[in-house]
Image (cartoon, rainbow, N blue to C red; front, side, top):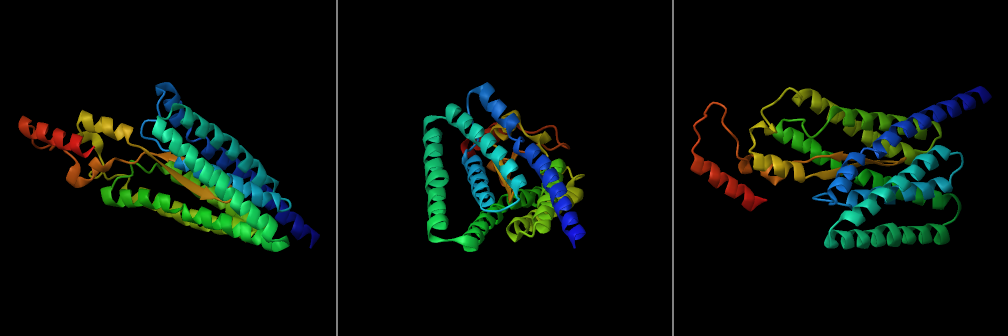
Length: 293
């Protein structure tokens, strides 16, 4: 019996450490984006909401971990997550325009201060003992699972365009590995609130890799080689942030998403078999694109 308990503890430690390592790298994924913001002194089309949600998730999981025993590995990764997300948010606020800056501050006060304070007061004063831990755990689970909708939009984009340009294989692989590590950690410490969200994360990661295998050699959809220079510029500027949440905190990944002009009925495509397009039609298409943008 003692040997079995020791084995479970050792496996939990191994899975937790590996989960920390993978999550550490994933938390650092937005660094190139914020280096770009720093160099250009502008947040461009990037939005702050994903980073605010990431911070909110990390704080909640830290609170949950503080009520549990022997979950130091949850505390380490979410402490790091809180620190790096605060740096991201402060950088965003510094370089955002006035409207984006105030919107970020308002969202921070409403969600990261107001909503967390409400959850803290209810769970800390109205609930006691094991019930407090259970309620808080399921709050964390609901937030984690709800945000898994973000990768679904990327998967839909891949199916629609038949291109994996905006769904890198390495990203899907690391998210899948992360889900495996944290599911194993939750299973071995017998914490269902840690294990459950990562079942969803693992399933989505596998589906993403399958889609990558299906469409990786397909260059017909989503291929931007035929876009005009103006379209390339627009594609470079219009970028969204997709976040993947798991009980260790929030895995935050930057994934470029094509702007609305990349939809089939809005894109000016060059016909490779016809090099004699009418210049007037090209100018009209460019004007249409400018109107859409």
